[in-house]
Image (cartoon, rainbow, N blue to C red; front, side):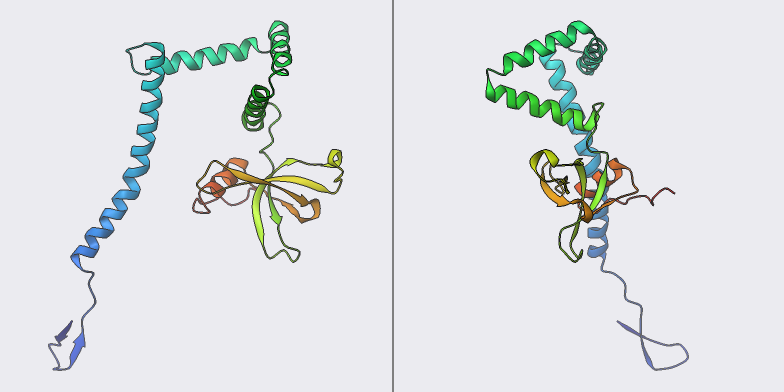
Length: 205
């Protein structure tokens, strides 16, 4: 697009303006980014609330979730008692006769303990060198600081979560190729799961 200058007859190019349809498409994409996360979050929360209420036969929205949280908290309170410890030990001995159920129970228990238990495992974010020259690296979490029991005294177990997925890989990495990150575990985990899209705050000094 061109126009004539008022003081000259020279043809001067005018500033390019985006096409109206392109601007509308940009607004649509921006609205998509703003609304989809909100809709997904509200939908998941509403699904959980209504499903729990349906299981308990309650008509008051949210009452089932409140009762569930209270019940879990009560179990946690009694979980430190001697009777609960004995009952848990008896239940685990019973599961020893059922290998598949034992695997399911122990795997679920260990996973929850790793995230929210007293012996958390996902609290040591590291940067592991996957090549000898250190050119290829990956973010992960040390889950076992020593593999001496497996005959690998100089190695550590590093778990690498996958982006946009609730899965990951466990790799054995030489301890010399692991660098401790000065960052919060939750921030590093969010960074990995988002595929590097989420911003990580600067390291705290």
